[in-house]
Image (cartoon, rainbow, N blue to C red; front, side, top):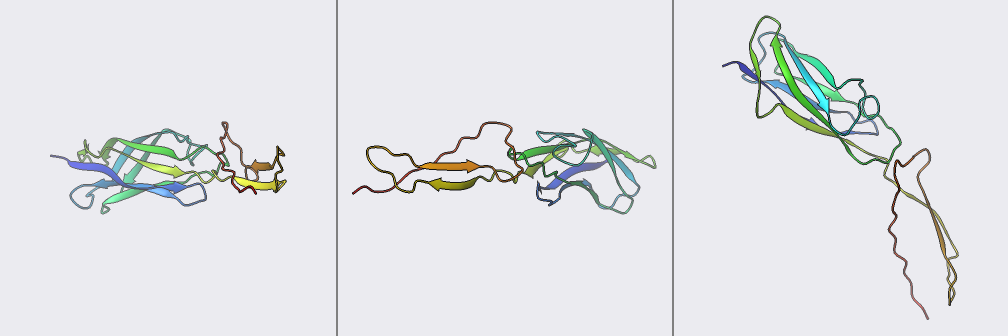
Length: 166
């Protein structure tokens, strides 16, 4: 039976610059030759927009003597409120550069990482009219996104008003 190539150990990336990554590993110890690995990328994150890269496919090499290689995931700080996004890596092929035979593990051919969104912070800019009078006088509150952020969809703000009456 040929040695197995698998994927695992995902680490999430953040939009504030912390890299993520995932390991591609060879079973049975160190590689006895350079192994060329091909893979596809999918998920809700977009290459070139949400993470550095320009393609939905890629390749890497586990070098002779190594047990694994790490694929780095660098998130782009896009200033969009969009929630966390997934990056899914699927192994598609493994070829020994000296003719070795390698199989992609059927149980560990796919794994995923997340890009953690850092733009979902709301700012309360101010409250005016700090006392209401009966029968009705309005109090105003203004909410806004931190500087430079945009929202790709409507935002719902839930709030609670409280107090006492005499």
